[in-house]
Image (cartoon, rainbow, N blue to C red; front, side, top):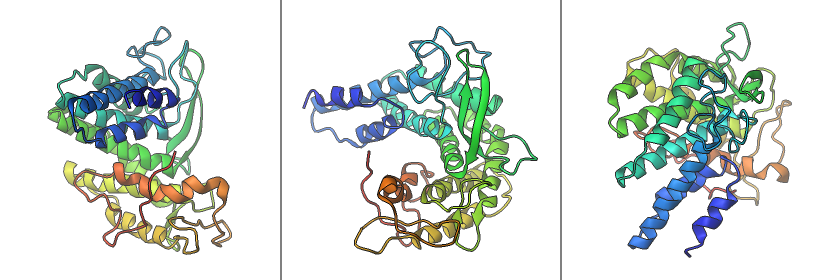
Length: 338
């Protein structure tokens, strides 16, 4: 048993696995002091991994980092090696940030210093996202305006090169992370920072919500990935629900006027998701609507997305709401898969 955390840590080769392990550690209930030490050690190791993926002076391999770099504050999928971030997927970065915030809150309660984690989060949200808008489509003339890019490319010095198109799934993930940054700061008594964050980043959140609304198919109550996409995938809709739930609570908390009813749109999309439940012999799977309007059977190559995406927003929705995405229970909740 004592070797388990080391095996788990070594298995995590990218930040896409790390937040899940962090949440598992947080859910672990210690039965004795040894077990508590295991959980704390795992949180520290996984949090350290995320920090070492951040293009900041807090990463171990930070010699190439300059605060003036375009990429400063970005969270890479892999650990920073000798140069700039080579694999920045804002959706995975957002999930990593949520995991790091959850771990930092618990470690602070356990008496550990979270200064490094807090500063890495600050650079991600306050500098990379808010000040420099590196992941945000700010072109008001573009059909994907307001969306969060699915990938941002940098050269070896951290200079911006290009972006991949935004998607609604990634946009929903970032909205959830932005709201969680508010909750995180409240939880560690940074109330002024929390309040300022809601006000200062509202324009990014508002336009992100508008992007999701524009991508929503009113007939099927599902969300396409972006203006170039036609298929209505489960992941885009599920993550959009998470983002809209957070945006709804954001507007209420910050006293902001809603451009539309965020909560009502989230509820409508949940109905669309429920309609895609696969009622065949394959339990807890979902179909998707293709550009032709049909609902073809789910393919084995995409089983993870179709089976589990409807449950992913559960760790991302506002703390003041039930984890269930709908009053009637919503799609079933199978165990997460890796």
